Image 1 (cartoon, rainbow, N blue to C red):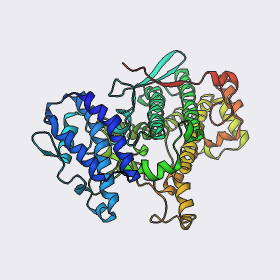
Image 2: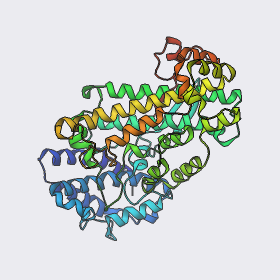
Image 3: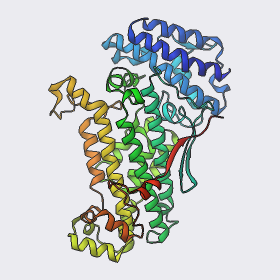
Image 4: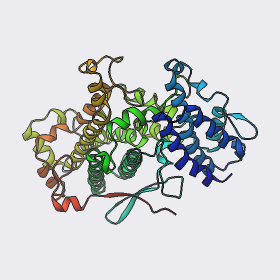
Length: 447
């Protein structure tokens, strides 16, 4: 089977069919019939694919499967109680394997622990182009894609969908760079009191600031310049995050494993966070679950730093301004780690702002009865089923970090204390020199 033919169908035919169904020009049955004709042509048994080939096909079939399921369930709200019926008699290949069974076997063939439905990894990471993060002339992280064409496959071909997938992929790449820079300190290979650890904290702060800027730029982009319109997000895009089976987890940005990994490395003041993370484990790859298990079993980096300094964990939280200055002068390492934690908290606020702008705010405007109602039933949810109050609490938990008392001092003073006076970090305005030092993230050129 030539993946190029299927890739072309997904890039060209599938978006056009979805647009036609959404506009009412064609019935949903036409999309299903077109998919049936393509599937029954010559797709071989799933076990015949090499892992890399299986990953590509999971991307393509994931987009197609969620398209069929979305239109089927949307036609009659009662069908949502039986999402597996979405695929009806849709079979794959000469062996006429039921679609859901074929997908599950293909997931096994990928040897990644991919769930038996589309997920964040296949929808975003494998779909979008290979992404490179660079700082000071060095590549810090490479997040591979599974296709060599430089294209991103979407449901409707809307430029906002392409831009949103690009945002998720580039954000994850920057997050991976942050986490990889910090990993040697978390492992114990780099001592928390060493200059190397300080340099890594400062580099991670620069990476976090680049992450903030990438997300702010997306939030500010109007639809005519590549932004995702609220209307398209609410009425078209997020509706493809549909169940394939009762109780499964549709893909969502909340399943970005590097975001969660950073919470575990830096610590988060959120009771039950481990249980919260484990609820999304069924939507993660095997290697992602292992990574989060590993990082979740270790002390958070600020905890290790304070223990190595012999400082009571309560002191950098409750200290006075004068005591904060004494701590920073005696232990300049604290300033570097504070700047990182402040940047992480700022990104949490930006992430919440972006989610609220394109989703929750518009939902409240459409249904004013929801405004001010924080009940789980009435409150808006994102595509992963997370309520707005939960996202607010998570953002606040990142702001209530272990060194927050040091924030009584000006950022410039903190930056100077750790020997990096030109760099301010966090939410402080950047001077020209600092802006020039921001790491970059880009898509690699197509092969």
